[in-house]
Image (cartoon, rainbow, N blue to C red; front, side, top):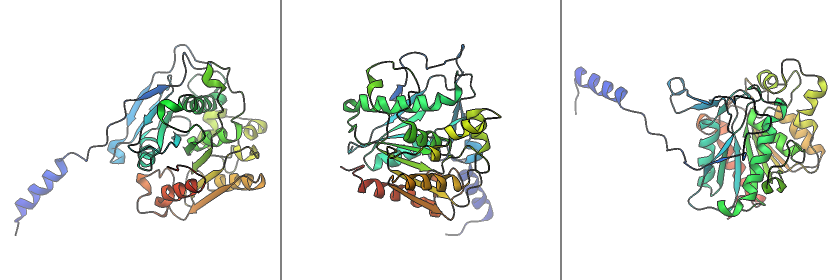
Length: 319
C-alpha cells in the first residue's frame, strides 16, 4: 500500500500524540517502619514530596524527598518461594529513587518468586538528630519487621536478602557490616529480631567515604561538609567487614562516572580478607544508576540473572 506525504504526516502526528505504555500500578500494601515518630524526629517533621522526571527520562522515574514517615512498599509474587528481599534505592542520601532502583527491581524479583519490600528511608540532611545514624536505623528496623511478620508475608525468616543501589548500596553494605550495632532503642518485640541480612547484593554501591573514591554528595549528606577521618572510617563498610558479614554479590560498571568502581573493589578486598563468600561482576559498560531499565542493551543487563544464579547456589530464592 502506498501513502502520500499528508497521510504519513498524519500517522506520525497520531503516534506522537498517543499516550506512552502505561506503567504497572503501584502496590497498595505499605508498612510504616515505626509505631510512632521515628528516632530523633524534628518538629515539624519533613514534608514529603514525590517528583516524577518522566519528561526528561521518557519513563516513570519518581523520587521522594521529605521522608518523615519511612515505610516499605510490599510486592508479593504470584508464585512465592519463601525468599524475601529488602530493596534499597539510591539517591545520594538526598532523595530516594523509587522506580528505577526500587519498584522495577522488585517486579523482577517477583518474577523469580521473591517477596520484595522497597524501602523509603529517611534522609540525613532533613533535620533529624544524629543524621549519620538515620539510614541504618531504618534499615535495621525494616529487616527486623520482615522477620517478625514472616508468617504474614509467607516468607522464610532465614532467607532475607538486602539489595541496594548507589547510596542505597551504602546503606545495604552498612547493614551487612553493622547489623549488630545498637542504632536505636528497642520499640517492641520486632526489635528482638536479628537485623543481619542472609545475603547482600550491591549495585554500583557507595562504599568509601574518604577521598579520592568517595561520592562527594553522599558523604556530605550523610556526614556533613567536613567529616573527620574517624567519621569517614566509621561509615566506610570496606573497613568494617568481619566474618559475620553476610555473603555478598557486587555489580559495578567500569565506566561509572559518579561512583568509581574502586568502591566495589575495595569492599571485595575486605570481604576476601575476612573470608566472606563474595562474587563480583565488573562490567565494561553500564554507567551509573542502570537498575533494570537503563541496563538494557549493555553488558550490565546481565546482573539480575547473575545475581539469581549466585543466590540460588546459596539456597535463595530456592523454591
